[in-house]
Amino acid sequence: MAVPSPPFSLSKHSLSNPPSFLASNPSLDPSKAPVLRPRNAFGSEANLGGVEQTRLRLWNNLKTNSDLRLQASRELPGLTKELESDKSERMERIEHGTDLFDEMKQRFLSFKKHKYMQNLELYEKLAKDQAPKFMVIACADSRVCPSSILGFQPGEAFVVRNVANMVPPYENGPSETNAGLEFAVNSLKVENILVIGHSRCGGIRALMSMHDDVETSSLIGSWVSVGMNARVRTKAATKLLNFDQQCKHCEKESVNCSLVNLLTYPWVEEKVRNGELAIHGGYYDFVDCAFEKWTLDYKESNLIGKSGKVAVKDRAFWF
Amino acid sequence: MQSTTFHFLASIMSSSSRHAGMGNLSQEEAIEGLKKLLIHNDKDEQLSKELETKIEKLISELLGTTPHDCHPVRRILGGFQSFKTNKFDVYPELFSELAEHQTPKFLVFACCDSRVSPSNILDFQPGEAFMFRNIANLVPPFNQLRYSGVGAAIEYAVVKLNVENILVIGHSRCGGIDRLMELPEDGSTENDFIDDWVQIGLPAKAKVKAEFGNLPLDEQKRECEKEAVNLSLTNLQTYPYVRERMARKALALRGGYYDFVEGCFKLWEVKSIISTPIRS
Image 1 (cartoon, rainbow over the protein chains, first blue to last red):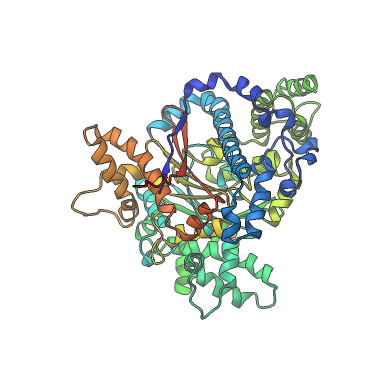
Image 2 (cartoon, one colour; image 1 turned 90 degrees about the vertical axis):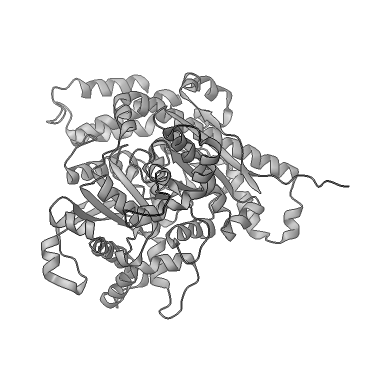
């Protein structure tokens, strides 16, 4: 039976101590800050060079030992090996756990000092209520956080993140995504919904790789089948392209599929019709660092009718 | 390096109009110069963080974008340009690596609330955390028929990406927990999906009512926000691949609570307790 251990809390009062904490903890000594090169995650700590990249530290490089351990556990799946677990290995894990806690503490304190305390008035206002203008539906992929790539600050965007940024249609019934949608549209009364797709999406790749007739037992398969229309349209339109190119096409097609699905919600459609709510699609390409954005043209889409296609306007391409 | 830094910043700040150009420096030159400062500033942690914030602010102003710009398209365009200038162009090696694959160490569950983005409060950088955000950061128990969205995220993160940590972050003034605590006893509902979702948290509500039923409702809600995190941590362990990895110590579960009213953050870990057998 696994139970939560007693919490430690970082309150306002610990803010006065950060400098001494930093000084006493060599693993967080800034002059030894690890290099940001994920390739080195499996390498030794000797590769700590390269001035350019020291500032953006990643968990990947905090303790390279952890990756070696993970590799080891992949190579030795047998139960007997695990029973031999080393005392020193356990000590390392405990140490690694403590490092993670320390790192998180540092990051929170840094946020508190440089953002929270510098904008107290804003945070006090936000503490009472939130009034975001945006609802964003984005993929859970670690590379595409909307706060990072579009710079959303606290209070600006209500963000739902799921695998492959999908919006299931109304008739599919309750899910975590449409609970968020209902709250954003009806309670928070957001003015914009933005669905953001992205390059090299694992969820879309899974969708495109699924067999046509075999029912999948994996949860990933069950979820991404929401985008089946996008897959069908993609396969029809991209017969001559290779698989990677087809996936890229599907990533954008799936965003449009989600926009169409948004309109199946009566309270969404009503607000769009009245001009209170605008629906946008977006596509973040992190290979070339470009962002494409388009807005659903409700009137034109209606004229196209039930073909499931969307009419768009105000297309923009930023790079 | 520091004196050069300040000299450069001073020359920008002293110009009469930042938006119109800077006298001797063109806007592009100024932005390029500031970007270089971001790369080379590798001194003391504290100072560089302050400088970093100031430099990023300056770059935003030069680009003509500031936070809380109300026009939606201008807002996201500005945000993207700022990201490209301050991050993507500054760390090309990292981003070309990330373009090939992601190896996040974290799976994070957080609420959709606009005030609690983990990238803001815990400074998660691109590539660090696979992040699932839903109402009240709830994780339902393993179920192959319902809630495949959450299940898909856990399956992907744990099985395909091999994350080493799962972190569930609750927060203060959570609208989802509010609704949970105010759910009518008779099971009636006035919305389509919200109630169906938050009722996942009913076990947490029951526990809070039992232990803190004498407290005012507001305080009960605060307790429930934390109890719901524990409930999610318990439910996570009903997923077979989570349990299997925890058993061989390849996966750690942690809970967090961000209180933006008090300005504090709590963090705790899930530990296994197997007591020694008692012999008669």
